[in-house]
Length: 188
Image (tube, rainbow, N blue to C red; front, side, top):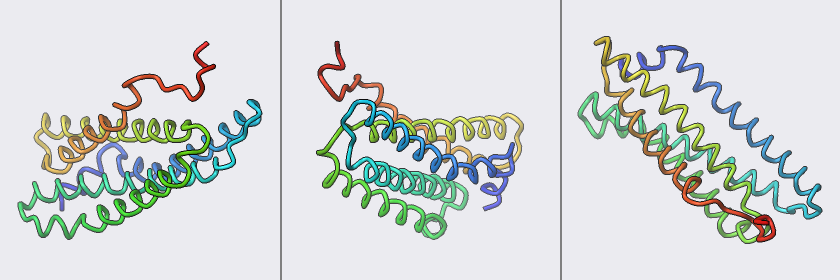
């Protein structure tokens, strides 16, 4: 686990991870306020705006927790080669984050998806794309720094790089696929 600790010591990466929950909470607060102001301005307030923001926030927290667990699992497996030890280190993060994300996703899909616009969902996916992109950029920088300077092990930085690159691709792909418009009259 020494390589994992070394990774968090590089360039305040650990501080970034402590800052992440506050950044997410503030971002979703802004999403709520902007959604409320836009609804008032358009004259059609979304009565489920609070539920949409809450559920997408919960899904984001679960998703990011599970991603961290998967990256930790991969890094621990590369470091020790023992699947059981790796699962002990990361199983709780993966399982807990996965359950929270699945609960929020199912509640969103079954209860609030059919009402109002999908603006909050698109903003939440965009926010996840930003967060995974930032973690990927930090992890890639750390991986290259470690590799080029021959310092430390590459297992953890490389695992975070691979996992967060895949997650960033998964989050950014739907946003870049085609523009989505809530109303037909917005096309004019």
